[in-house]
Image 1: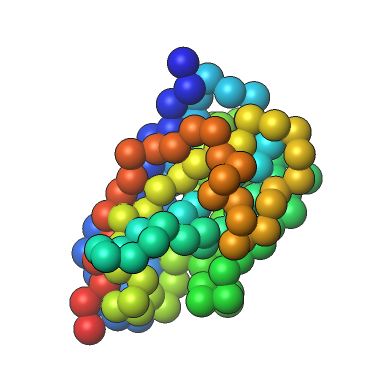
Image 2: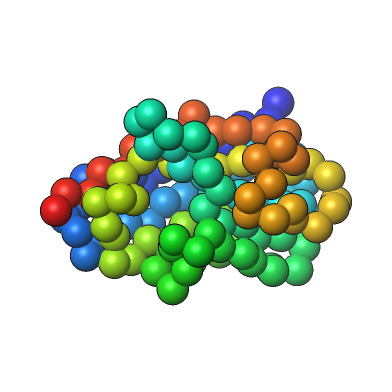
Length: 128
């Protein structure tokens, strides 16, 4: 059974930092695409960052480039999202997702449709 468990969300003031974690079980972790997504109230879910665990290549949404960093720990089957310089507009439910195929990651804009498994999400709230 595939499980993705996010943690690390919370409430911070603008300019602060949070690190989200996504613990993965039930799938091969070392050769697939993992993504972080977010959804704010009343808005569509959007891709934030992705990483291919086979080679470590990463990509980011323009809105988070230079502020967020996605990384992996193969020994722990965990993907992280380090979020710095947080802004109120980063407030959203954050989800991690996994693509079970061995294909390269899709683009940030299209990777939603390639994901096979999703976590339940963790809330991030940034106050001004």
